[in-house]
Length: 120
Image (cartoon, rainbow, N blue to C red; front, side, top):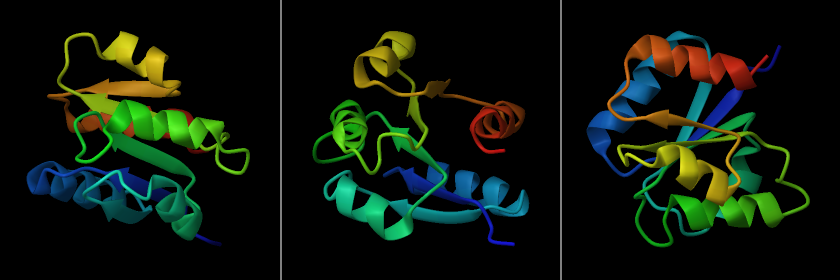
C-alpha cells in the first residue's frame, strides 16, 4: 500500500526538521520546498494527500500560494493547513481558503491531530 504523502512548504530548517521527523515516524512520505514559487508545479510533481503551508514562506507567501492551489481544478481538493505564529491565523486561513490552520508554537500532539483530521 502506498504511503500517504505530505508536502511541506517551510523555510525554517528547524521547523522542517521537526515536521519531517514526526510525520515520517507516523508513516507518511514527506516532501518539502523552502519557497512557495512554483507551488503548482511542485504540487503536481508530488501529488500530496495533504499540504502544510507556512504563512511567511519566501516569494509569494502562504496565503497567495494557497489561493493559487485552490483556483487550480486539479489541485483544489487537496487539503491545505496554514501554519503561522500570526495572532490572526484563523482570519488568514479563511482569507486564503485553507482547510485548516496550526498556530506556532505548536506541540507534537497538535500536529499529529491536525494531520489526522485531513488524512484518513
